[in-house]
Every structure is written in C-alpha cells, then in structure tokens.
Image (cartoon, rainbow, N blue to C red; front, side):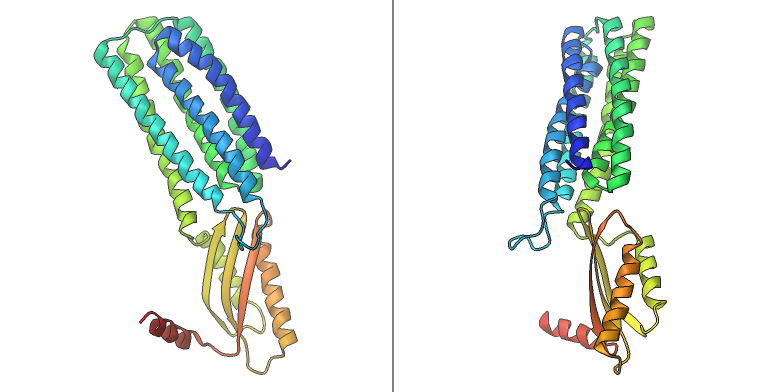
Length: 300
C-alpha cells in the first residue's frame, strides 16, 4: 500500500471518530459551533473517501485509452474538495445567523469543551502526519487534505474558546459570532485548494523557479546553440516538459541523442520525488519562426 493511500485511510478513520463524538454532543448541547464542526467532519469523511478513490485511479499506469495516465483526477478531487469545504462554510454561516436571530441557548458546556479539546489533539496529530506525506510525495490531494484539516485546528480552537467564554460570561451570542467567523475562514481557505486544482486542470506551467532552472540546464549544455518552444505542465505526480533543442547541422545523431539524454538526466535531478516525462525535439537550426507561421496558417 502506498503512503498516499495510508494517509487517506488514517484521515478517514480520524474523521469517523470526530463525527461520532461531535455530532452527539452538538445535537444534545445545541451548540451551533460544535454542530458545525460535526458537519464539517462528516464532509471530511466523504472527501477522504473520495481522495482514496482519486489516488487509486491516479496511480494507474497509462493505457491505450489514457495515454498520459489519470494523474489529473487528483486535480479534479482537489476542486471537488474545495467546493465541498465552501458549501460546509456557507452552511455553518447560515446556522450561526439562525441561532443568533432565534436566541438559542447552548447547554452541556463542560462536555462540549472536553469534546473539542479531544478533537484538537486528534486533528493536530493528523495534520502533522498529512504534512509529512505531502512533503514526501508532493501529492496535491494529500496537500489539500492537510490544508483542510489545518483549518479544522483553527476552527476547533475558536470553538473551544467560544465555549469557554460562554461558560464564564453566559453570553450566548458568542457562539454565533465565532461560528460565523469560522465559516468565513473556511470559505476563504477553500479558495487556494480550488485554485490549485483548476490550474492543474488547465495545464499551468511548473513553478517559475523550476522553469528557470530548466532553461539554465539547457543553455549551459555543450552542443546546444539555442532552444525554443519550451512548455511545462504537471499532472498528478508527473512533470511534463516539451522543448525544441537547436544543435549544429553537422552533429551526428548519436552525439545529439547523447546531449539530449544528458539534459533530461539533469532536469530529473531538480525534483527526484516526481516522475518526469521529457520530450525533446532536435533541430539543426532555429525553425521557431517557420513553425509559428505554419501554426498561423493552420489556424486560418
């Protein structure tokens, strides 16, 4: 079993535990903050289960139907997860406003405080583990999951603070204020997750720092006189690079192949955790202008 799959199983297990204890106390106490946190944990479980499916599919090798593999399903999962997080944030905001308007009272404060304390401890441990897996695998789904649970730490901490303040002051509207603030923060945090997923689906280029290093590798290699049409993108764990390498017309095919292989090996060293798919087109002269004119003609 891969490390990514283990991470999704662990997060699903933690989400299940949190659902049971939060949902029970949230319903019995009437705390909109605790109930909102329970709803969020239900969504966490659904998302984690979907993430397991997405990772399993994305790890499948390329075939005749999907020539480049199914890595982009990770990006799709991230967009869905971000959307789910946004929906949960909107629901929490609705519940907070409703409770404030109806002047509802929160009960079982001591039990709720204990439950939220346990929730924070479990979530902190999970985030530490997910961050470790995300750094080791550079998996967008796991990184999104880690960010999601990180927001849970802040929201759970805010809920705990709200419960403590209500316990000592008796001001019930504190629950709604904190619940609303948590909802806004959750919605804001979902933006980055959705953005990263959408950018990958749209074949955004690799980080500029990596692209600049690729350029440096190309121009510093003996035998290369120029390059053009450098394109990069990422799909799942795979970094794709396409480039036209310009060499002298009299170079042998064997030497040109050796130079191309050397460049590919150096590029792969930039990120050893990722899979690289590098396609180098070898040119005896700079034909970029000719190619561009032909593309314009083809476009009509």
